[in-house]
Image 1: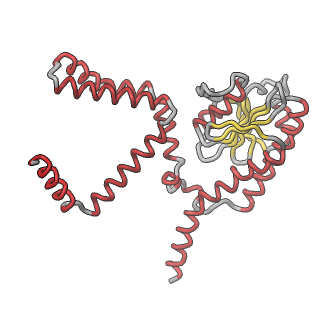
Image 2: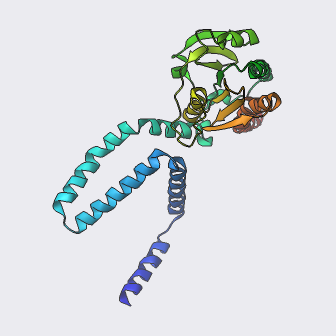
Image 3: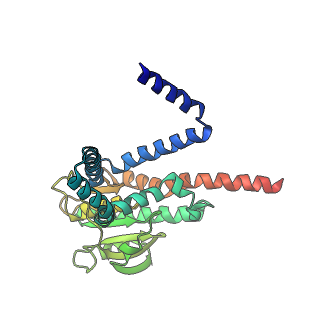
Length: 293
């Protein structure tokens, strides 16, 4: 009975000293834990966290039970194991930081979108999309394998450096020649950056997703891989079937027809950018109103 009374008094004392700052502290920590669970779910990092929790529980039990040898070994593991884990899981950590940088919070530091996208830029994007869709339509018929990556917020400089810099205005002739099956750059990926055919023959990271169909070849796995490591949009034509697929955020989807592909690309390359830039437009509008006053 005295124990229950002690717990009750402790809870009442805690409630009395609870402030608004404590409330925000709890909300922020809860939000961070929730986002962390979402981030590691169904990845190798999820198994890593489970292993760390098991080791932590074993360390606490060994310390409480006075298992000196076991507690010493586990203590040394936690001292030097953190650095080893940072090295082993460097790709996952990089992907997590890039994911945070592409989030809504990270978008507030994306100064390039503060003024929004101009109508001139929209016209250039639509022109490039039309050209790509036109070429892919002919690739479907001829069953020409191709892989094109559209750069968005995440810069692909490390990917571009693996290929050959072209930096030319997009045209059906250039794209068709690059993916001609006897051309030296046809096996790699083409990167479209700033509405230009920026590079060809680029090497992309292959996905490690074991749930993908075994029927998918290297091009499709590379498309999924680059979409996992960045916010890029990758489109691929199968050399075996002539089918077109699009990879976004690690998910590969089959596209039924060219019109669907065109609408999807315009939505991803223009409308999503405008939605992300709406917050900046509102801020700038507010500043203009204040300045007028």
